Length: 346
Image (tube, rainbow, N blue to C red; front, top):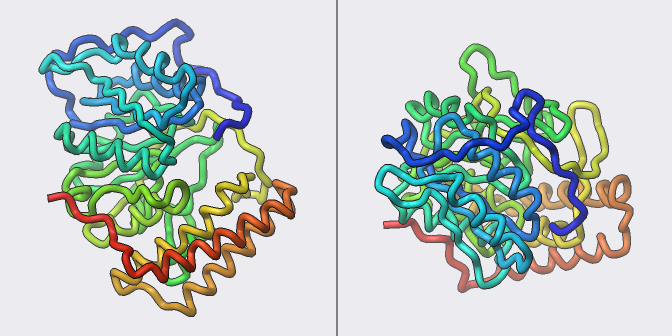
């Protein structure tokens, strides 16, 4: 997460002048939403995101920023936006700065951030990483969908401005996303999904109450996938045909036409394989686990990672070692008799 960063500038139609502060609220927003951001040593990217939040046409109720013990200027960047983000109608600052005592990964950060936003009483929780920016009408675009669904995923633009394809259809028996699912929205403007992405996923607090907090034990990877799966067991989840975010970081990738194979690190590779152990435990808990079919999905996941190593990352020795360590870790998790799922919030 500390590789060199390429940060986008504001959108072409955005003002180049500094955006005014949101200011004191004159009333409650139409959508009572807490934006939950997790960041780690990417203050330049975080500054772009927070600036975009100040430009929202409708302000959020809260902006919860979880800093995973960055030990750089991240804290100063966060505090520099306190005045611009303004105050709520009850006089409290919208910004909630939540520095952590250690880096618990994206999973631990979102678990902590969701807990804070839930305890603040927010009706909706909007989760996002620090390498995106929100579009000015995003909250207004999401508002109509909140009348119909309790879990909503909006669309994103890639770094280059093209539509980002997200694998919204998750094959639960195999434990892998469907790479060829067509996002043909049609006249309805939405598609059912059984997973979510913490890069813009919107959750009603009742869903969080029923399924609990995101599981911090994942550290990174598959955490949002499993959280979306759990949400789909209690409510209908919707991918909606409306753009709400743009990505602000360019990453190396292999262009496969409409699909992209992004580069990654050995740390991520390890968690990709290890966290399938957690995934299997949750699937088994809900009666959706078949050892042989899931094993096939694990083999397909391994094959994909080997292709990624060979074609994008070119780190065969260290990459394969990370994959092997991850598979051993998954086996230990699956055999751990003391393992328990995250509890619901009462």
